[in-house]
Image (tube, rainbow, N blue to C red; front, side, top):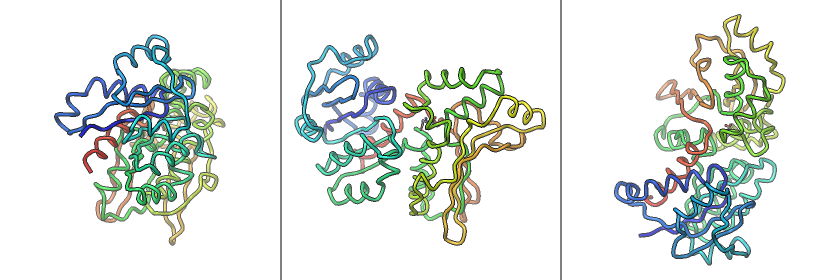
Length: 340
Ligand code: HSE
């Protein structure tokens, strides 16, 4: 079977997915039975290109590399649902920028695809955080699959581990570093004496930061992630606005230096626990003793410790941001959806 893939959002992450798909086409077919053609790419800045027989990926990638555009292709117009139908899409990867207040434009893309029975994977925290119940119910009622591995810890498979690998465990609490950009900034400020602004610029150019990086530095991104984890782990709604949240904008180079001299590293810590049936989620900068494993997590790496009944404490460390790392999250979901 050949899957017709639509890509909504062709920025860093969407482009990385296309690169991986192009590089690994033979391996994906042989090892995973995943055969595909990309029939639709739509991007707010680059326009929409559509070919039901499959776009020439080499040509698409050349355009993206040389001019960050899709200008070699004629542009298609139309409402999103119509574009999905004309491209005969059967799967969609959604990687538009996150808006944690409205979930848009991803929310409309995902609703439109699921309601047509098109399987969806997204790396976009907005729709998952804003409309988790609606989208999972819609997927079920339309016979479509809905996966979102990349919304927490990019391609590091935290959600698959929680949902499948740890099925049957009761999670009591989780705590860790869930935002790559802020960890990158804090690491740079501590180790290379970079200024806050330079470190943020570097995180942005490496593709770690959100389209609006205030979402990272003010803790909204990590808050969105714990809000999603509250749903996945406890089945509880904690809206992002109810996460007890503080970002790193108050962390000065002096504070970092002083902490370091006293044997601590400043980290933006996100956590979630359940007290007497009431879930509590927070994001806050904390001074972590240098002897603690979280103190050694550098750059855009994330780490999370999960305390459970059957397994005690399980710690997962891996990339938390990055173009190829997040492209991998879309890929693992596409492979899973073609196998399920
Ligand atoms: N901006 C996010 C981060 C990207 O830095 O962690 C991955 O969600």
